[in-house]
Structures are given as structure tokens and as C-alpha cells.
Length: 525
Ligand SMILES: Nc1ncnc2c1ncn2[C@@H]1O[C@H](COP(=O)(O)OP(=O)(O)OP(=O)(O)O)[C@@H](O)[C@H]1O
Ligand SMILES: [Mg+2]
Image (cartoon, rainbow, N blue to C red):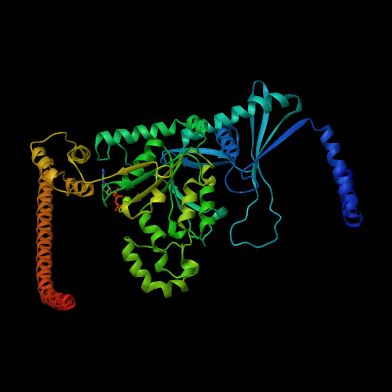
């Protein structure tokens, strides 16, 4: 029987090869089509495919991700080949099905077959990056259950998958790749797991202000319907400003932990142009924060600087300049060399950035916070920070007594101490950043320094700062006094110089009057 079967297959193979070789191509296509129809007519199953990336390849399909989450628990029980991934700060491991595995599911008595497959790439080009086909999940079920599957089962899978995803969600910290570096899958963002421990509890600031910010965040998170009703994109802009070391970056981490959002830390100097900026925006997911730190350094806002620049460089962003005046000076010197390096310079413009924040593209995704931080709020262009773009302006300032109490509780685990009163009065007179306070409160030895010695350290630091401040003030006053005196003496010299002139003017006037008087007397005579 085997011999007969073997010869039959052999002859069939020869016939098939001859058919492929000698039969006209268009006829082959016809036969192929009819064969498929024949198979379909006898196939009692319906198949639905869910691709990982839709045709635009911008972002992973939400349905695919939800299905992946939904099937993860089922595949752990059924599939033989699994893939592992860690979630939730690496505390647990989630298993998912590997390629070409199958999983059986049951819903209201209906049996459903899920399989994970990959389309094979037929491209003949040789690529530097690992090329892979399109991944997809295929769902197969009997034709008679078409209605119940498409109407209720798929919705159930999506909702369950989303809920599982939210439970296993790990916050991520993304950064944009330099414009000529495209990593795996051609993505513009690289990410790591976000594990910053800052929370609002550990943040030293005025409790009322803190409460207000928390309320604002909660209102935003729960206002999906409200934003839809008023016809506004579901996003909100925050501007954090204040001197260095006052907790701007710490607050960003605290917000991310509070809302459980991903952070997209956008490095503007690595963005090629406005189009690139837009593409970066589209690739961000919802429930995220887009952060641009030290906005005054990343982008020299060009409104006031046009005159100083050659025409072709107008409206371009230039890099690394903490203060505008300084940047202007530097640019004067650098203009020739920077034009050589033009291809590497970011061409993001102010209008590009404004569009990024509230243009029509910014509405895609929804539920997004856009946060800018700066040390010099007064240097920023008004258009950039007007309400509507940056809806909430938050000032983070020097440490006050309330802030100190939070830090003392965090660092030393104390709520009160006899030295607190002295610290309170010193804090009222001195400008010290929370970063400096925190540094002084940190025990310097592993043996567990007593709280009192840390507080003493802080008092010493406060006294030192107060002394420095007083000296600075005195110096400034002296300078001002000297300036005033100089102005005064300059004024006197000027007066003295002008005196002879006025005297001569008066003299000539007197002479003129006398001659005109004698003339008129003669006329009368
Ligand atoms: N308000 C604060 N509450 C708690 N800790 C703070 C606060 N401000 C500063 N710190 C501490 O000081 C360090 C520096 O703070 P942070 O990086 O947030 O300052 P920043 O305002 O972002 O400064 P820069 O403007 O230089 O970026 C943090 O690691 C944190 O430990
Ligand atoms: Mg910072």
C-alpha cells in the first residue's frame, strides 16, 4: 500500500511541476482561484485575522495588544512553546504564546481556535535591520456562530484584554532616537522601564498647592466625556518653572507615578525638523506625558532674534544656550561654522512646536499631558506658554518650613524636634533649594547618624547661605551707591561745562536787545 501511495504522490508531483512549468500563467491564476473557491465552499470555518501593525505601521494595533493580553493566561495552560516577559517592576513574569502555536477558547458553548502566525516577507532586498514579516492572530470558528462571535465574543476579548493590560502595565520611559538612528522596527522612540520612586508624598512643597495639583490631575484623568462634549482634544499642558534644584523633574516623576502614565522625554535637539516632530507625536501612546525639560535651552525661541541672523537661518532652532543674550553672542561667533554643520542642526521651528502642542495632530491618541520645565520662564515666548497651550503654570520655589517638614519626615522620619523653631526662622530669611536641604538632611555615614546632627548640618548650611546672601546684598548696595555717586559727580561736571555756554548765550542776547533798542530809538527820532 505504501509503495502504491508513494508512486501516486510521485506522479502527482511530476504532473504539478509540469503544470507549473508549461501551463500559461494567467490560466494558472484562474485554476488557483477556482480551487480556493472549491475549498472555501466545503470549509465550515470562518477565519478572522488581527495584524500587529496596520498598513500605516505607525503604531501597534490596539486589538492585537488586547488579544495578546487576553490569550496570555490561556496560552500558559495550553501552548507548548511560550514566550516570557517581565512586568510590574520585574516582580512577576507573564507568558505569552510563541509563533505558530494554537490555543483553544470557549465562550457560551462555542469553541474558538486562536493561532499566532507570521506572514513571510518575500522581499529580495538585503537589509541591515532584522527583517520580519507581519505578525497576526488568526481566529477560527464554525460558520453557524458567526453572529454571537462577531457581536459579543470579540467585544468581550477586547475589554478583558484591556483590563489585563492595565493590571500588568509597566510604566515606560521613552526617549527619541537621534534622527539618523533608526532602531529595530524603525521606531523613533527607545524605552526603558520607568522606576523612579518619587511620589507626591515625598515632594516638598506647599500642601495647599500640592492638593490643588492633585485635584487638577484627577479631574483631567476623569474628564474624557467632558472634553468630548466641549469639542476639545483630551490633553493638558503644564509649565513647571523655578530655580535649579526645586523639584521640577521630581514632580514629573511624581505625576507619572500618580497617574500611572508613560513618560516620553523629548530631546528637541535630536529632532530633525517639524515633520519629524509630528511623526514622533503620532508614535506616542495615550495615557502618557510628553516632557520637554529646560525648554529655554533646547530651542532658541526666534521671535526676537530674527534681526541678528542671516536670512536662511531665520526661524531655526539652535542648540544649548541657557540665556538668550548669551546665545546671541555665541551665535554671532559661530554663524560661519554652524552653517557648515547645517545638516546636523535641528530645524524645528517655534511654529512647529506650537503645532505639536495644539495642532490638529495633537488630538490623536488622547489622554496626554504635555509638560515643559524651565529655569527662566520670562525668557520664553508668550505664544508658547499662553493659557490653552500651557494650561497650568506651576512655580516651584525655594524651600519653606512646610517643605522642610516633608523632607525631614522622608529623610529622618521625624515630625518635630526642638531645633525646628530655629530652622523655621532661618528658612524665613534664607533662600535655599529643597535639593540643598535634602542633601544636608541625608546621613553621611552608614552607621545611622542621629537626626540631631543632620539638623545641625542644615542649620550650619542655612547660616552659611544667610551670610553669603547678606554679603551679596551689601556688595550690591555698595555698587549701587558708588554708581549713584558717580552719576552725581558726572552731572556736576556736565553742569559746570554748560555754565559758560549759557553765560555767553545770555550775553549775546543782551547785546542783541540793546542794539535793537537803539535802532528803534533812532527810527522814532
Ligand atoms: N520639592 C522637592 N521635594 C523633594 N525633593 C526635592 C525637591 N526638590 C528637589 N529635591 C531633591 O533634589 C534633587 C534635584 O531635584 P530636581 O532634579 O527635581 O530639580 P529640578 O528643579 O529639576 O532642577 P533643574 O532645574 O536643575 O533640572 C532631587 O533628586 C530630589 O531628591
Ligand atoms: Mg530637572
